[in-house]
Image (cartoon, rainbow, N blue to C red; front, side, top):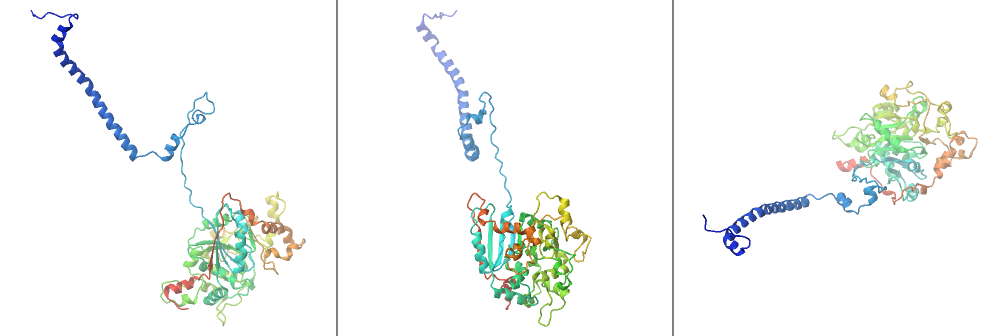
Length: 475
């Protein structure tokens, strides 16, 4: 038997002496086993915390996310207006839609001395509008005084004035060598044939409208006509009237250059108008001018003075020679875009009862031929002809042109407007008065400052002059 007697709690001293050494060892071992996992866990937690901090620095939250969730929470946003019903709000969805820039409606215009500005284009437009205006100083002063009244526009308006001297315009006609005019529009009127030369190369397409016309609808609809040009050679579109018969004008009344869509880039590439500078170039690197063969095909050889004879209607006579002999360049423009007082008497339409039904309106209209079954001699194909007037029994008026009003330089000053018995006056005087009298100030419909962007170019060079400068050709 062991000589050591069991101890009782009443013997604390003996307990310490007998069991203290072994107890301490076991207690310390047990405590070590308990604390080691805790240390490992703490070490792993520290590593995880450092990783989270490093990741957050490398990948910060989006600014709008941070802004949204750091903002004070509105109980109504979180729980809804009924506080008895807990309806957590969904986080906001941030959809960023990048709209493509809107293509402006671009005009190339010629205005001299007493102009009629295209106020109506700004009245009805749903797009930005760019005006490239060839004019003289008097016309610019008049026009600019109106454009400066526009300070809060809904759609941006850009105006570029080009002021070639009369001498430079005359010199360009002389360098062409074969054209002339006895039309009242004179030399400035012939500049319609040279718009592609006067305007910078970055103006690729443009609408031309005579000064005696005003819009009755959005000009962007006319600009959209370019999108229907499915042929890369198309360069010119204007109203056509193939049933008109005027042999004394070489049938030039079968078109009207009062409203035109011009692909200026293609006219430049085809070198529409000739020049003594081009004729002096013997490099063989550039095509001959497009127009001379068409002029001679229609008018015969030039006269003794080198000029074509009996060319009527100014620039329109030359345009007719071009499109009638190069139908691949031409697309007829629908009648809607040229409701004219000249020869066609506005098709006998005009203001009237606003409830006029289609059948009654169609019955009242005159001078409408179904051009799909008439003379197609200068059109490329039957498919092109059907694009002319597919609604030959009814026109939806889009542009009114008050041309052929004699004894006046400005259409709204025509003495006939004061004659109550005049048929044109009865049907169109209120529309003319409204568009002329509509105040420029009323076009300030925007909420922020947006004045017209205006620049002026004095004595801009023609394209043939630039060509001479590049290729060192004297003229």
